[in-house]
Image 1: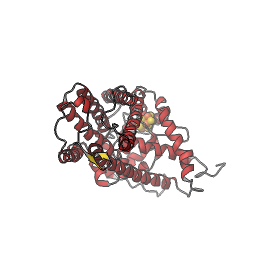
Image 2 (image 1 turned 135 degrees about the vertical axis):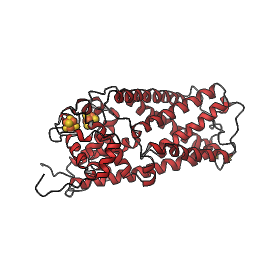
Image 3 (image 1 turned 90 degrees about the vertical axis):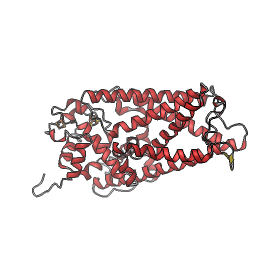
Image 4 (image 1 turned 30 degrees about the horizontal axis):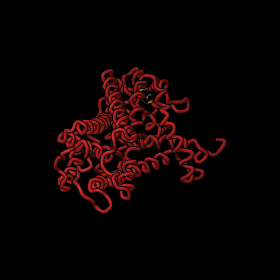
Length: 400
Ligand code: SF4
Ligand code: SF4
């Protein structure tokens, strides 16, 4: 540090890190073992040793605009080998959680999602919205033949314009939720990108067009994530890829199923009669839905037990931020699959109650996506794009 340079620690930030899984922060004595074992560190970038000293100094603005912090995938290798038990993996996890709340939009909702104490409110918001719509829809009674009717009359019968009332009300709840979530994530990622670009210092040589940005930075990052390349580089926590991959693939499967249902039932169903109602059990789309639901439960079950094991071995701290997404995904998988099983058994009451819980769980997943660990997927994708950007000719003149 140059003479006269002052470090202005953000004491509140240091306190936050201590409370959010980074309580071992002060033990670090800068030996750099973590940087040697971290599969993401290079000779030029001694990661995460420098982040540990920044965290001790409370340099919040530097840390939350550091793409390397977001690139860490919490494999726990550094924590496993740290001779001081400083748990750098947990410290970085706590910084990420802080960053997602800091960049989160709107602030009130981001703050609400930051603490486990608010869990009852987080459940109550979608439970109330869906409960009120269910009550007002007139659909709050059990069908005689739930096997055949499925959940297509959950929100009552009849038509609203070209759509069945059920589809109309589901769209009314979920389309604005998804649109809100995408907008909030966009605001958060934009704020993060600006902060990271400002942290680089200097002025970029020239700005990439949107097409260049997607082709050169964003798309390669998405491909790398889908291939799970960096996960495979982890030593201490290889099992995680076994849980992470089925969860990722199941989300892709369920995304396809949801879009199929939207296009076929909402759009084509308007012109062609008989397309509403449950999809037949042996329809390939239904098979994809069921296989994805099983993959989701199995994948999240592996991540659950893996996380428990890491905590038992002292390689990770138990934080609300880490567990909230696991609980949410587990709730989506179990309620969705359970509702389907009870429907097939012809048991209308548990099927309908579980379906209601399923809608609540799905709404929670979408509504809180920009602030929970799910956001990590989005922020990390853009951090990986930024990693390419900062090394590109847009920032560094050719030959530098
Ligand atoms: S976190 Fe641990 S391994 Fe890394 S520099 Fe500090 S003491 Fe060394
Ligand atoms: S948790 Fe894994 S990826 Fe993250 S800093 Fe530690 S060793 Fe590197």
